[in-house]
Amino acid sequence: MAVAAPGAWGALQAGRARLVAACRAWLGPGWRLSGSGAGRREGPAVWAGGPSQRRGYSSEAKTEDELRVRHLEEENRGADLKERAKMHSSEVGPFVSKIRAVINDIANLPMPTIAAIDGLALGGGLELALACDIRVAASSAKMGLVETKLAIIPGGGGTQRLPRAIGMSLAKELIFSARVLDGQEAKAVGLISHVLEQNQEGDAAYRKALDLAREFLPQGPVAMRVAKLAINQGMEVDLVTGLAIEEACYAQTIPTKDRLEGLLAFKEKRPPRYKGE
Image (cartoon, rainbow, N blue to C red; front, top):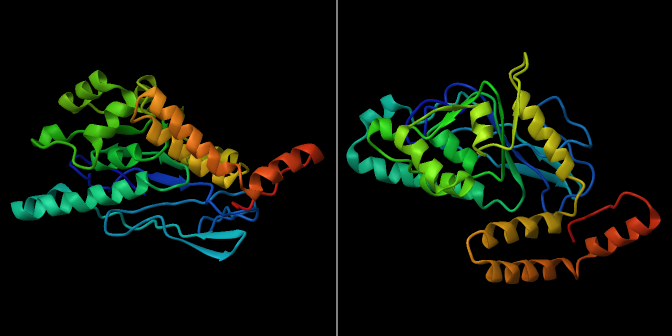
């Protein structure tokens, strides 16, 4: 998915960013990548989303242990500034609301998501990345919430997710200044987890995201889902309430077949064969 250009959504015309959706709740072994030429059993599920016109996390399960992933790498013609200038003022609100809904859908996916930023992620592009659980970027990548340059504010969740990611004071500074950070600067402020030197293919962050997804993939699918739920909900409440949320989420793993499989696999000194049950 290309993410670029200033604006509430960004023009989505330069650079590349991909979202890696790992650990589908019911999947066992046999994953493969489809459409990328890299498909192997160890490969994670990849979502390469496009602009708001198309919902990106579209995958088809052929069997219970195989996931076919669609790469949605299109021409990336998003809502650029020329298009926005042609909109009537009454159209802008509903348009941004649809963008916000799509980004919220990404944030609410039950499996871990990784945003890999290999080019530009400005405006809505960064808001989409902020909706992911983990962000990685090339050192040459550029990212920022630049909407105030256009006399508007981030409208896809940026004013809420950026402070939660890097702290209120620094988030205000970046939004008020419309500052653009490179990968090293983004890593220094905690906006991304990993920064990498760009390679000749221009997909260093994408490759790192795949490596991370492969680390996630062997774990118990139910555990991954409820761990994400516990973290997300717990961060919004006080510690006592958060611990109660953790207890409730832990309880969901106790009756699962996967938990028993994990114990048996440990006893037999073999890799577990989780089924998400």
